Image 1 (cartoon, rainbow, N blue to C red):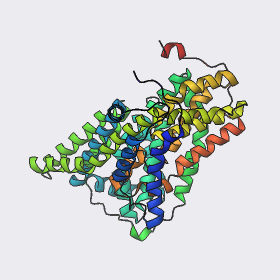
Image 2: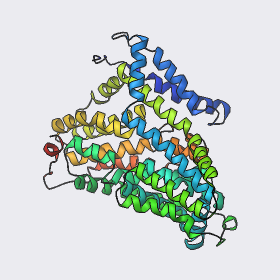
Image 3: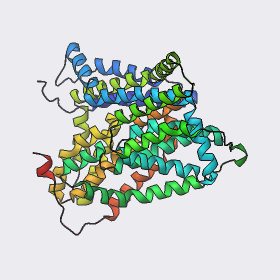
Image 4: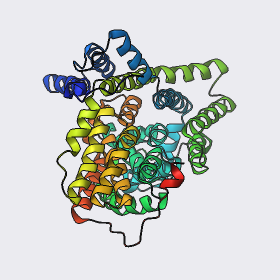
Length: 442
């Protein structure tokens, strides 16, 4: 078993290199899509493989093994499969006209002023029911793209609305992996963490909806045709129903793909050969994303092996001396780890034991620490252009991930309200916390 590497700032440089490549090329060329994401990750992965920690050097074969183990992590493989299924669902629903039918239905029955807030609310609702931001993004992003085309709005704006709603629902859902990770590591009940979260993030959601109401829409550009087929909307409705029934994201996407294929065949929109070609086309759209997921897993594993993650943890918590400082330390630590690993669940699981120790030392309410862990990790996950959520949405929309970060209003706001919650000490809990720690750690 590999010994724990001494902490080392150099271990974090692969992700710093990646960000420098993307942002630097965008500034130089005035086009943030000029540096392909996959190429930037390949360069960063190559750099990570030739990097080392002088205090605990690794041979190249050892580094390759660590990289492959990280890329083969079950969370990473699941993410890659979700990307591929999302592409298939997107392609099939476009080819049968499901996206256009859904958009036209909305344009006919929802007042134009409320279309964007409505898209945000629907995304929130689906993510809360599904318990996954990725599933919501893959399901609802096509509708957001359709809105952009019909309303003559920037695609980055409407797709960012979906991402924001997805992060809201994922943050609050009882079945979200981030919620489960936060409550298990802090030993609190789901309902207590939900109450704390809701009080903090609801104002951010309301402000986001109000801002979306203020977005100017050119009424003359709105397509108000009633030419749509309700049957074509069924794949999206089935996805929502399956989410409400608590099915996991793979099953939900599977139901969506099968239902779209059945409808396409029954209406003569597909033959067997064109149906499979449509699925293949969608898989090809997301192949790069699947590879990127594997590269991210490998790079993060190497950063851990070089002591970069440990350096980040140590330097984030070493100067804490007050209760409020401890809560800011919780927020800073989980945010920094999310930025470094591009995975909010991994960030929560990695910081959970450290945060629990801080909570004991400074008498922090574990309901608040669980809430802060989830809020800040989800906030930054909805902002970083190399996170799975923004990468998936940008890939489906065919736009730069950075353009989505600029419109990520809700993730920005929950970070702001998370900081305000720390400063004000709200929400306060008078009753003693009901611990699930012993139950969850048996």
